[in-house]
Amino acid sequence: MTAGRPAGRFGARLAEAVTAHGPLCAGIDPHAPLLAAWGLTDDAAGVERFGRTVVAALAGHVACVKPQAAFFERHGSRGVAALERVLADAREAGLLTIVDAKRGDIGSTMDGYAEAFAGDSPLAGDAVTVSPYLGFGSLRPVLDLAAATGRGVFVLALTSNPEGAGVQHATGPDGRAVARVVAESAAAENAGAEPFGDVGLVVGATVGSAVRDLGIDLDAVNGPLLAPGVGAQGATAEDLRQVFGDARRLVLAASSREVLRAGPEPVALRDAARRSADAVRAALSA
Ligand SMILES: O=C(O)c1cc(=O)[nH]c(=O)n1[C@@H]1O[C@H](COP(=O)(O)O)[C@@H](O)[C@H]1O
View 1: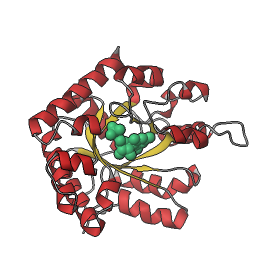
View 2: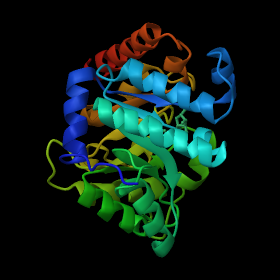
View 3: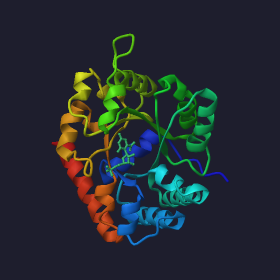
View 4: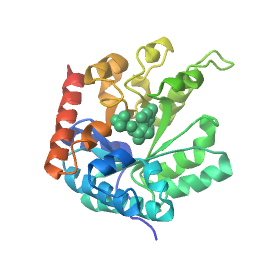
């Protein structure tokens, strides 16, 4: 089975969606407590219902959604099939998807991940999250295939969890921090693209002064900056302004639990997403 290929470049499609609906990506994270709160079973049928409910409620109301692959994969092949159906619904509804899979491996294996998440596979959304800790260059297969199929890639740079700093702030042989090398590598991929390129970074809204401290020029990345951590992890829309400074135009805030807790009623989900999107847009334009 193959999925249809998106029309146009990811960065351009995302920019259009953010202009229409605001800079918010709503997570689809069907973990056990949320499924219970929604009155759903914690199995493949439950995660499918959860994901498809979010897509139906939010299509046409948010810029994009980000299904977390882990919560589907834990139910094996049926869970993966559920994720494929959620992605198919979103594609049909014209809702952009970032598949949060955080993959990363060496060349030949990375080819496989690239085909799965950036090729014309039923597991491919409009973009995928990837991990650069086997070296940014190891991501070449997914960067190239995503570019060829009109998809995007979000590379982990400064993650929202406190343990991330031990690796991401570490300094390499040339004196640059790991996160800075990732940011400068993404910038090279996006050079000259308008309004921005297809290679984004993940930079948590919880990272405080790390961007400045490590000498990272996020504006120069010229790609979307996926910013998780707003809401359940404690960061506020205000923190986004502090963390991203001059790069605010590139921010796409990601929020999962804060929006999902409002479900399963579609109107309540939509209202929660709209409130978050409005708060983020206001903070970023202040
Ligand atoms: O790539 C991500 O989305 C991500 C990166 C990161 O640094 N931190 C982070 O929490 N996430 C994801 O964001 C989701 C949690 O969002 P909240 O429920 O809003 O805290 C999970 O799917 C995480 O995997």
